[in-house]
Length: 352
Ligand SMILES: *Cc1c(COP(=O)(O)O)cnc(C)c1O
Image (cartoon, rainbow, N blue to C red; front, top):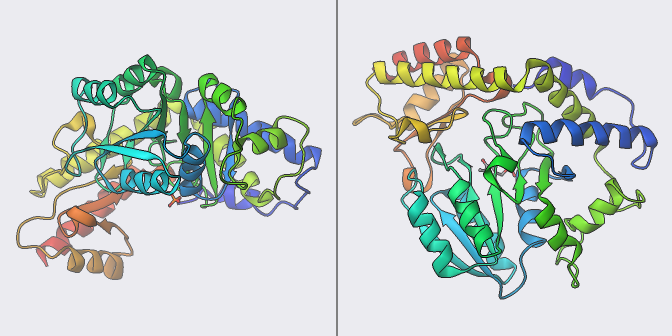
């Protein structure tokens, strides 16, 4: 759900993409985003486009043909990262695990030291499986060999502590429509000083004009030289959504997500469902994946939920097709009331 205040902000008159007022809005977004990302990175801004644009920008600016690119692959979005990196001509190596499992410190480290990649990518919050990946050991091992780390924080930002600096992520990106409770359309992105140095030292331009972060840096921070026309309305929306977050307070917001996630899990278990991610510490607070019970048709359940209760949850896909439900509890949608309503509706749908 999007807060009414955010819709309201979107009604404000459009200014030009080089208007000083627009850069004030962009500056507010920069400051507030850094707070939510948990970073002091100077380069913290947004790409015009959805979360996938952030992913593409992260890969395109830091990957060159032939460069070794390591992916921790345990879900749909790490496969998408693989696809984009291969399109860039990178030499992709993958550490694969079944969907829903995560990577331990020792094995992650051994993989990185063995493969010696230039870039390492992992998904902090894997929306296809409901699993959280702790990235600390990955970042430490990568930095030991001088590699940069890309962290996909699309489903964690705004709902869980992303902790870019404390984790050591060099390039983190996200979207507006999940934990930030904003319409889709912008991709927050932040670069560590190490990544920024690499970016600035590039002698060959990135193989994408639109996602060239060097050009975007000059537009936002530097001479405000025209690069592309920013979607002004989305900037108003994001600034307001971030202001809502700052007013709630990060600690309180994360605690709200954690509490509602725990209440949902307790309720699901009381209905006899089991969670796909077995370790509670590795479950997302924003996206919950109970397994579909034996003998239950997940499509019929979801159809009932939407037709009779107006509640949309999603199913699994890929290897988890028909095996899990995916229940989002993000941003403004993460409420105790939503948890209660869903549990009641799910109970009657399962019984039917
Ligand atoms: C949603 C999502 C994306 C892609 O974001 P879009 O806004 O759909 O382009 C990337 N990674 C993860 C983990 C996601 O959940």
